[in-house]
Amino acid sequence: MASMQVETNTATQIWMTWMGLVFFVSVLFMWRRMPARIVFLAMIATMASVLYIWTLTKNVHLFGVAHLLIWLPLAIYLWVSVLRKKARENYADKRQFYIWVWLLFVTIIVSLIFDVRDIYLVMMDLK
Image 1 (cartoon, rainbow, N blue to C red):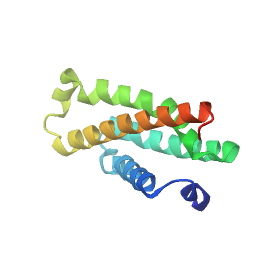
Image 2 (cartoon, one colour):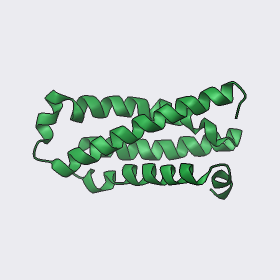
Image 3 (cartoon, rainbow, N blue to C red):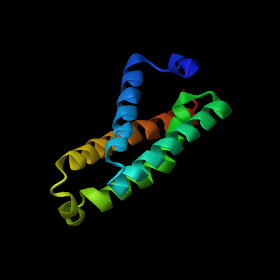
């Protein structure tokens, strides 16, 4: 962990902490909400994938590969099962859950944008 942190700047470390917290909030909802259970599993799968990528490459900029493989389908799932207008009706009385899913969804999308950029820079040998 320490060597991974050395490779990132303070803003990135803050963003990674935010992502971890938003994903971890799934624990509060997972006992009653299937989407929260799937988010929790995605968090565990992402952690394992990132550690594997780090072991192979020692390049934090390639963590985006794990994010793309796990979070892109997760974002689509969250959109279809919770956020889309038709699905939203199922969660009308679950305000905190719905707000959390929106925060998580936006966090995933922003992260994926940076991940695509990082992967591109690594492929072009710029990072």
